[in-house]
Length: 308
Image 1 (tube, rainbow, N blue to C red):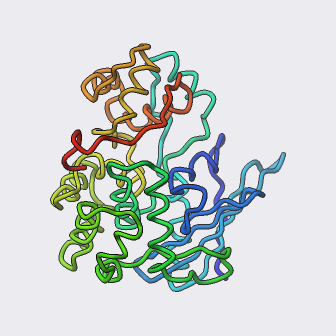
Image 2: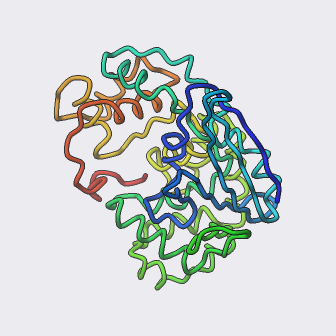
């Protein structure tokens, strides 16, 4: 069983860093145990892999992260472990420009932006989250993986699955999408992305700059700015991948920074202009530390967003 040790810079918050990779508490691909152990499955370029991440915190050595992996993709997964955990992220370049941001930056100084290096595994669940409640999207993700995901290698907890490769997604029949609560528009977007010509080119976006990767993803009909940003936040760990077209985010940003309740993308872009190059990080910190409005609503009405 291959193993790797990584010592992160201090301060470091493992749970806060990895939380964005988990699609709800029942995500079959990412799980956190009560003792703080994280399990993650993925479909690497070399095949499926299971990764166990254990955090050790001692008074002398500080924080030490141990990664253990199983499966054909184990070596690839451990090679990418520091990057996954945010080693390539540099929060030191971030300069708070608002009091609420400065307070959140101090309180959550251990936050890093993870980078999976895998596009399709983030793209599919992100498309499922288009124009629908988060809970409904997470249900669809769990149901589809239970039916089409591969059992993970190694001692992964019961119920975990490996994200199917594009050729398996292409085999999902229309009635299975329907049973999972996925409408035709979202299913079609996923199937287009998983086309044998498109999928390899989309995966190449993991090695691109944010503008080039965004443009590459948006070549697929049904994948717009919202979906591209949410995907690349995870696949690239991109600190400037600001989500546009979201019903809630501009309202939350506007309320936290100005007290206004009528936030729009235009206002959000104006407020976050001082954070150019770091707008996604700024937005995450604001959500972590700012005043929050009630978010119990759909992500966006169908009429508001034509292409996500």
